[in-house]
Length: 139
Figure 1 (cartoon, helix red, strand yellow):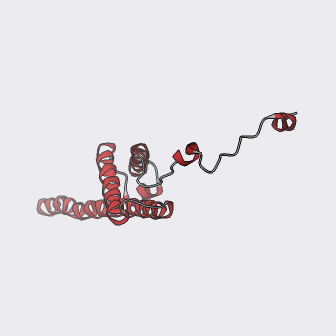
Figure 2 (tube, rainbow, N blue to C red):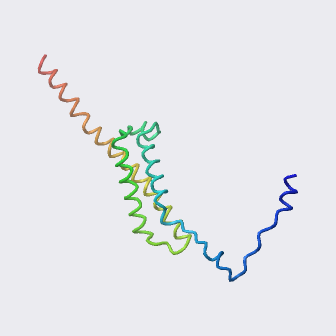
Figure 3 (cartoon, rainbow, N blue to C red):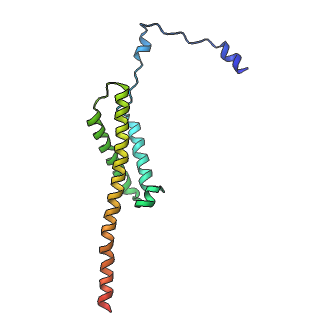
């Protein structure tokens, strides 16, 4: 029966070559909407503070620190992509700018967690050395 209903439904009328309604439709992939950028930030926060492979390897970021870090990572990646891609004149250029943006987000995220882990590692020996020195003096 579903096929009968489809057959009975009128087909949309083809638009005439000079029809303005078809020409009014515009598709732009770059720059992403604010809603999309906010979704990227939310996903970065989940990645930084959640139970992810990245957190298991480099350590989780406290939720209070994850939000500002995610916003900074996204903003820097967007600015870098905007400077490189500028205003995309075609869909292809928009796709290239979006790919660059995505790679920049990933690269900056990895750089952030690596530097945070390195900072934590650099601080850890100095904290461990102080109690060891105190134990040596007491003996």
